[in-house]
Length: 202
Image (tube, rainbow, N blue to C red):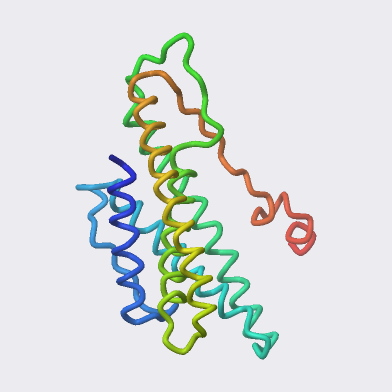
């Protein structure tokens, strides 16, 4: 099941990141893209999300200087683009994998592609990790820990439901009951021609 593979890799990524817990630490993907492209992409995807999660924490520091905030904002922008690109690479992997499947005449299309479902699974893994931290915080009140545990229980249920939905989607695609149709994000604000601010500075 794709969800089991993804959830296992996401946990490994998040645990690895928090050994140093530093947004500037070196990134090394343990999966060779030539030998296991999907695992390589899943690992990269979650690493991007994990670093960005901590960028988002840093930029919310009320005492951060405007200069430092701008640097982090630029890093978040770049990370968002990297995230989108990686999701599209994952979808390209699935398109290639299932290109020979004969789609049934009554096949339906899903509201989102498999990779965007996996994207949400990666974010859920981060929410679960950090909500569990809050539920187990020794310096927090019992009330805080209990509220965090209640939220954690919901997140765990949500992950189970999302995992099931992703696996069912992949099964439907493999059987030709559903078909993939992927639209590129076509973000305009990073494009020198489409963003009028960037265009006018040329």
